[in-house]
Length: 121
Image 1 (cartoon, rainbow, N blue to C red):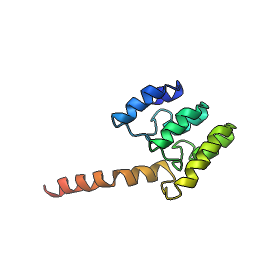
Image 2: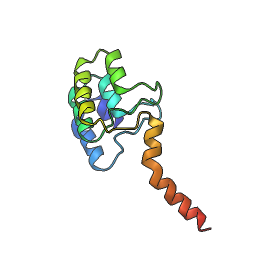
Image 3: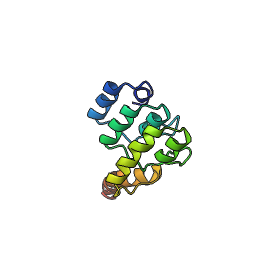
Image 4: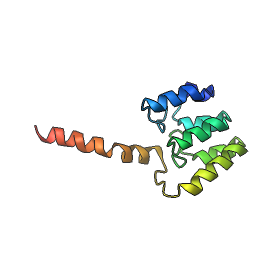
């Protein structure tokens, strides 16, 4: 998905979303998310598509711990700032603020299932 975002390949990224790739996954080599990479690459259509499909506008980058909005400001991506502000207004209920918070929230069910399996032994 990451390369698709960098190349602004909307079709490829939409395919990855359809098959269930985690849209908020932080690439282990770059420690950033598809949304933040789309902002850095100045791909407004990609940024909008990712947000419409569940990318978190409040998920901070793993490497720098900066928010998507902070990164958009740093790279002077005015279009991304406008897009993010629209999504932040609509989704004020978003709570994850760091990659770690997102992973803990997302994996809670998985941890309970693992605990249940091991408690049977």
